[in-house]
Amino acid sequence: MQTLAQRKLKVQFVKTHSKAQLPVYATEGAAGMDLTNVLEEPLTLKPFDRAKVPTGLIMILPEGYEGQVRPRSGLAAKFGITLTNCVGTVDSDYRGEMCCLMINLGNEPYIIQPGERIAQLVIAPVVQVDTEFVEKIPEETKRGTGGFGSTGK
Image (cartoon, rainbow, N blue to C red; front, side, top):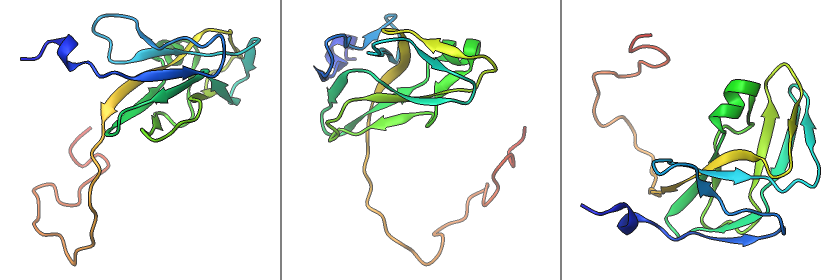
């Protein structure tokens, strides 16, 4: 069995802003690294306001991997602050600054402070597939076309 150190992947970052911080894991078992913002001044998100919040980072991912930008559960639970696209994908060939598309789904304005942790970044392997049309479903399954609650509550 491989140790955690043997399974680590090297991911590089380029700073686009002097205040940019490398993403870090908050705990030893964390799946996601915290992303911080590089705002120059506080940004108020009123209820249902959206904003593109910069991280000041360009990520250099190896081919075959993606970065998943996810909401921070604490911000979502306490204040209703989340990401407009739920999970944002950073492709391995993207070389622009990572930004977080944030929205306030809460009832009160929320002030994003400069340098605050705003999202988390999970690195995951990607599988690309070959696609084709076929004339019919090759075999039926027990579930069939049942969806949207067909397996219970």
